[in-house]
Image 1 (cartoon, helix red, strand yellow):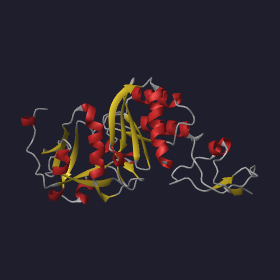
Image 2 (image 1 turned 90 degrees about the vertical axis):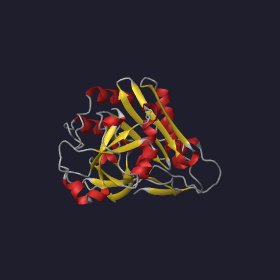
Image 3 (image 1 turned 30 degrees about the vertical axis):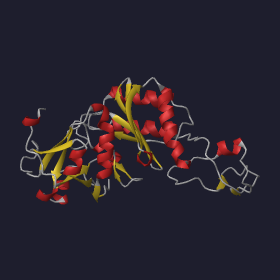
Image 4 (image 1 turned 180 degrees about the horizontal axis):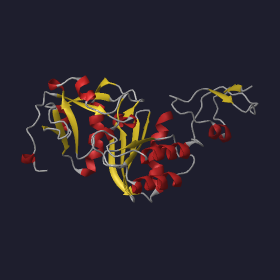
Length: 127
Length: 177
């Protein structure tokens, strides 16, 4: 997608929530998410200042999902560009953002791994 | 009644002892004692153990069970609109696992991806390897050890079993590095 076709950039100071929606995305040995939770070329997140952990988790149809947080500016340094864009399924969720992975496909795995290691756990999953 | 044997010499151990050490999933480091579950061990050692090989007879069955579970995931299994895991990818993953030697290393995490693909992950002692089955014939890998500034990424043919073995053995070695 062309850059100007995307929504406005999320401010670098914002933190973003990403839900851990399947058990395999959680690495107990690292107490953090798998890089697989950060799908290329884009994935959904919520802007933390515009929602709450409970609000993000309550929109998911599964029980026991976890929640991790990363900083938008730090993620952008890794070529993960967060844009303020509505979720078609939940248009009333004004915290929603899409995070686009702009890195070269042959660097996407290391960038996803770095992002996974930046994450702070807000709520570990309990599937 | 199982016996417990401990090492009584700092000298290198005979190869048969080193090779016979049982693999225990989830352990942090190799212990200094050895429990003989069949009560067939009549020797006592004191010293340090050195991991030479993994023998995990449940390795393949574990991975097959995980793959079966992932193959049954419905569309939108990740709540973000993911497609079903592709059967071609499942088949390719089986092909890879069936061709690996018995003593290649510890069990991986078998992780579904929102793209409909699968990733095998090993995280051992600060090292990590990720093998993503990118297509029926190609693996996209990450070799990761930030302490030693290793962030290697690339693709290779799924038929290149030597490359898969090399990566898995590299991450397995960090357990006793």
